[in-house]
Structures are given as C-alpha cells and as structure tokens.
Length: 225
Image 1 (spheres, rainbow, N blue to C red):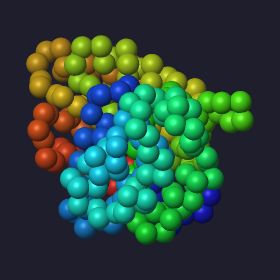
Image 2: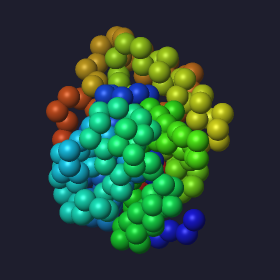
Image 3: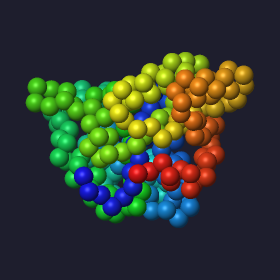
C-alpha cells in the first residue's frame, strides 16, 4: 500500500500495561523534536466518545490536533474485546474503512503511529464473513512494531511469548519498552533475561508519571519505516 508517512505499530503483551501512555510519550517526543507525527487506531472499545478514549488521551498529551474521525474509525461503548463489542453493537470493523483512514493520515503526517488493541493476538473482528486480527493491519500497512510491557513480575514470560508469536508470523520488531519501571534486582534481571532470550534490546524504561522517554528522538524516529 502506497503511503507518504513512515509508520510504526505499537503493540503490547496484554491489556493495561500502559501501551496508550507509552504511545503518547512516543508521539510527544517526536513532535517536540519538530517531527510531524500523528496517531491512528483501528478500533477502540469501552469509551463513550473519542475524546474520552485512548485516542483522545494521546491526541491531548502529544498535542497533535487531529479530528476524532482521523484518530479512530470504530468506537464501541462496550468495555470488551473489539470483536465482541462489534458483535454486540452490530458494527463490525471493515478493513476497507481502516485502510481509508490510514491512507488519509499517511498523507497528512511524515510519521504515523498506529496503536493496537490489547495484546498482539487481540481479535478485531471474528464472524462468519471475516476474521481480522492486529497482525492483519501490521501486514496490510507493512509496519514494524514496538512492544510495550510491564517491567515487573511475570514480564519475561509475557514478552518472550509475544516476541515468539510475532517472529513466527514474520512481524518485524524494532524494540521493547518497559513501563512501570522502578529499578531493583528483579526488574534489572528482567531486562537482562528479556534481551538474552529474545535478542531484542530494551529501547526505553518508563517510570510512573514520566513526561518524557529516555531515548533520543533520532533513535526513536529510526524505528519508523
């Protein structure tokens, strides 16, 4: 698919590990460095409006100024997986609609950051007519990914399984960002073990309340393709 913008997909080891928070920091970092970076998400569930959603948060924190329609084409009120929310609300995600929104954003921005929903295996649509997963978007738009994970207990297992799943499906990974970093022997060992077992570097460590990423904007921008 032809596009003007370089793109990056942000996925995670699961729900509630801080993927949206980190996505906001990524875009904020690039925009403050003078790079024209935007945001896009195929579907959001569990919000009454775009402004109250993950997309609205990123739009505000990174000072992007995108319209609701450009941020996300599918918004569901039900706080469940998008495929189930779509079934309940009778509004299934259409790949053509997601592609159109991505294309419009790719013409507006030089760098486009697409956020996933939950973990990498999260189903976006699953019915008799079509089955869509996050990896379908990654492949459709030829995007490399960054994985967001929690820095604490259990993250070795979660990260390694996510990486193995993605490698098995030929989904390129640029780096791993650990959220909720507090330091200490366990978290330092988590970093060492993740890098040793996956062969992928920890790109940044995010502490609670951080307003900036501990990675140079130039290095961050290099993740985009």
